[in-house]
Image (cartoon, rainbow, N blue to C red; front, side):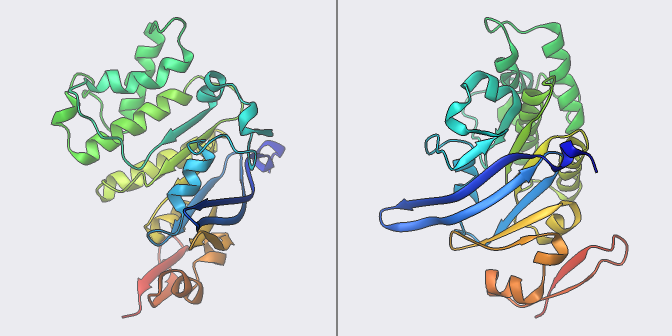
Length: 266
C-alpha cells in the first residue's frame, strides 16, 4: 500500500459541541486517510450531520479539525474550496435554474473573474454523465424529481473537485437518501472511484448494508459519542448494532460479496 494511501487528509481531535446545555458531540476523535471511504452511521439525532457540519466549518473554524495537515482556520477559503467539497443533506431549489448552471457553481473556485471556460463547460457535461444525467443540462431544476435533483448536486461537488491536483476531500451527508436502488449504488460507486484516484471521502449514511458493501472504515455514533469504529466486520456486529439502534438484528455473510449482511432478527 502506498504512503499516500495511508496519509490522513482529515483529523478530528477531541471535538466537543454543546448547545443550550446539551452535549451534541462529546470527545470525538477520528481520521480519514487519502483514498479511503469512511462512512458515519447512527440513529436519528446521534450527531452524524452535526459532526459533518463541524468538519465543513459551518459552526466556526475550530482548531479541533485539521485538513491536509493544517488546522481548518489556516486554509484560505478559495484554495480550500478547490480541494474540499461538501454535499449537504438537503439543498432546496426555489428558482428555475438550468441544471448546467447549478453544476457550474462548482467551478467558481477555479474561475478567474467568474468567467467560465470551455474547459469548465466540458467538466460540467462530464460530471452530469457520471451521475447518469447526460442530456439534462438544459432542464429546469424545478421540473426534476427529488432523486434527480440530488444527483445534480452530486455532479456539482464532483465538478468542484475536478482538475485539482494533490490531496482532496469530499464530504457527503446522506447522499443516497432520495435515490432508488440503482442510483444508490451508482453514487457509492462514484465515491469508490474517487477513492481509487486518491480522494478521501466521508459519507453519512443510514443504510447499514450499503455501508458494509462500500466502506473501508465505519464510525458508529450514539448520543454524540463514537460507539465503535473500524472495518465493517469490526463494527457491524449484532450486539453493537443493538446498543446503537435498540433493535435486534442478525449479521450473516453476504452470499455473493462476502461482506457482512445485516437482517432483522424479528
